[in-house]
Length: 228
Image (cartoon, rainbow, N blue to C red; front, side):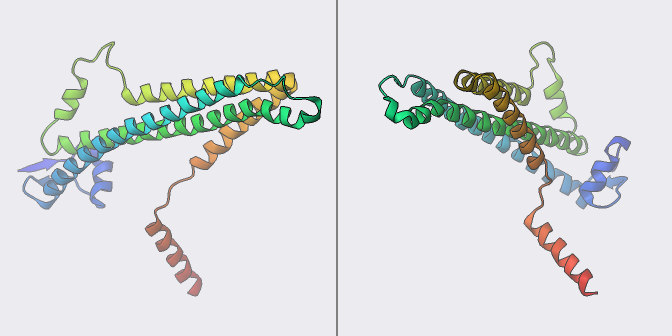
């Protein structure tokens, strides 16, 4: 029995088989390849979903530690330091600011990580939907679309919202502490630093990932061209 590839899935199947594929038989190697890849995609999606909540739990514990450290640093008694120890007093005043900046920096990384995980989850779901269509039907699609309504929330988007809330919280804390220690000028500088940190990290982390094998092949190809 021949199965025809739908027009909207033609590009995916072309990339999947690394060759044009309009039809295939149910007992062909292509069909077996689709079945095996479907099982692998489901396993990989479940494994990444399991690692996502473990990773999120690790970050939340880290944020709790930073919150506790920040609270402890704000309770330091600076009145006992004399005039001869002004440098120590300034250093103690800077501790909460450094903790707040560390929390803000880590929260940005957590936000980017949740966005990347959400994108990977969506990509795996799309792959499963297409592979399942030509393997066993539309079970995955039917299961995830039934009962849709006001309670049909997206788990990856919930992670992103939580990460964004934590990031904004640390940003407010960081700017407030710089305002209380350095005034309006310090608050403006801290806001500028926060913006630049976000932009620089965003630019750096958006660089495409190149596998080490692909990198070696590219360098070898360039070396061959130079020799020619």
